[in-house]
Image 1 (spheres, rainbow, N blue to C red):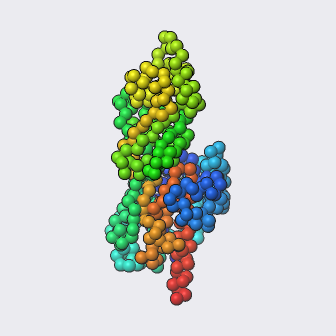
Image 2 (tube, protein in one colour):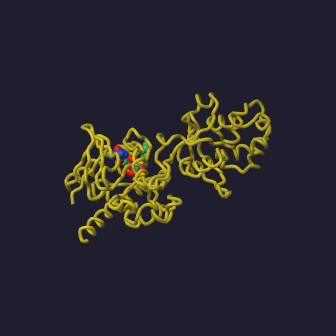
Length: 386
Ligand SMILES: Cc1cc2nc3c(=O)[nH]c(=O)nc-3n(C[C@H](O)[C@H](O)[C@H](O)COP(=O)(O)OP(=O)(O)OC[C@H]3O[C@@H](n4cnc5c(N)ncnc54)[C@H](O)[C@@H]3O)c2cc1C
């Protein structure tokens, strides 16, 4: 069959290349059962995609293009050279050699007739009839790289059920003082344990690290629990995290250490010596703990073990690493073809699923793309046999 690839940008894979700036975390080496749990509410469907193309398949695919991968200390998998460009270059070369035609600067606007795609190009609008199409138009984060969520309107007009696009793997906003913003934006907080209650009242705790930023907090621990925080904010207007800044001590042991005679030491110095707090953690304590509690070792120990952070909003989707929401999986058949629009398949981040960082995003994009590609072949074969 003839395959044409259309992209709004002047070249393909710009977000893939950006992911390469962080080393290109292609996938994760953890056990399949744990891997699939990362997809939360959508794990049953995504398990089916991964059954056909999983983390190991992705590593073999990269090897097939001459790019070896390795497992980092956290289990994350990267290309040996930690770069996306060589992998993308070889991939595109192989596609061109197998006959795929690339058409850049073609922004898909919707359909002109049932089987005719409508594009905006620098030379005006074009209408292109197709037998089948895979839409893999991404989410709405980093729109400067091509994926701007502009596809939501034509798909919704066509009656496709699309869940609202929302930020995923994003920072959260808090009202910091000017002092904290100017002196500690960019400072890491580690290690900490975040405690929270989910929307059903179940208590959770997770150890990790995050970064203080101009507007609030960001980083891996925040991304990992971001979906729950985002939903709580949308339901209740805020999400409450309680931070244990001193995971190494129990609260009574910490209180005892802080209650020792302080002598001439300032409180900041005392917190550093007796509780092991660095400057960023101390700044957070001075920002959030009131004066009476600062003066009382027992109240202070309680705060250090459960410092409340009230998050008021996620950052906008344009800044996020990925996008939640998208074409609802219920609108698709097992080949990822739109039930109400035969011959139209969807794949990647534009589908309604989400996962934390760690290589899960790219893996599910590849796995869904493979299902949709096979789906097209199957559908065209069935049609021509009919
Ligand atoms: C900073 C950053 C770092 C990341 N790092 C990692 C990582 O290390 N590991 C990981 O697993 N994930 C990472 N991700 C996420 C990962 O890059 C995405 O999940 C993945 O690229 C999504 O693939 P996709 O093909 O669905 O969409 P995209 O990669 O967004 O590709 C969609 C394509 O569709 C084109 N397009 C959009 N709309 C139209 C239209 N109307 N007409 C024509 N073309 C259109 C776009 O130009 C684009 O080329 C990172 C993301 C960011 C922002």
